[in-house]
Length: 267
Image (cartoon, rainbow, N blue to C red; front, side, top):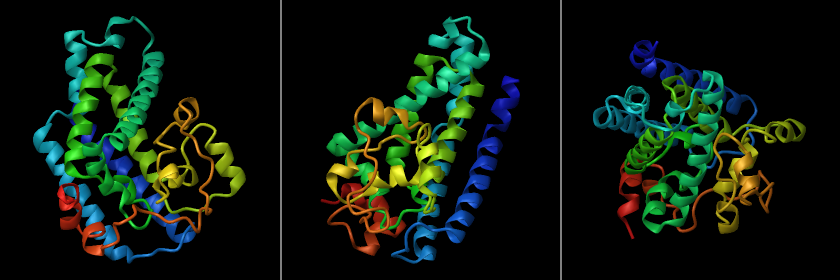
């Protein structure tokens, strides 16, 4: 089973990514929440080029990826869950929840530490908010995130299956909650009871600092409520709120790949 997971990890993740991307992209086209400010061709081509670049870098730097680390930790007996004789399904659920909480705190730290915010800002300066925004991160941030994830896996000792479930959940959630999709208020309210919705996370991409410093969660919505960073709606409403970061309006910087790569190193 472990050998099969390691051999097919990439194809599993890629299948869920492409399937989720197509669903959200179609949903955005049929039922958009906000009018676009920039050409989809301009933004999507550069955002997706960044995704491809990040994927290649991760494969070159971390050939065994997170699943390989989980299998290695299991073989060595490292990590909390490898020391506990619990049923697989209980360990899997707890591991996914704990890893999601880690992503919440990592997200908060990337906002609070200036040098890390310089990297994370590449995600926030996107002038529009759609499915491609959810995968738009600077390569250095992607590498740091993978290192943090690997350390967490060694300490927690989740199964390879739990790591795959978590990564599929994280990627799917990022595409969903960054989607430019219009959900009825009643549906949004029901979903955000457990999961982060587009309306909930869109607040986090506001230009108003108090709103940017809220709704850090990616998959589970409970962390923002638990750690008092939850904000229900933006001050100006979902359709009128301003997306992006103040002072970053040059399309050559915020929309083009070369500008995104240089942005953290510019004053």
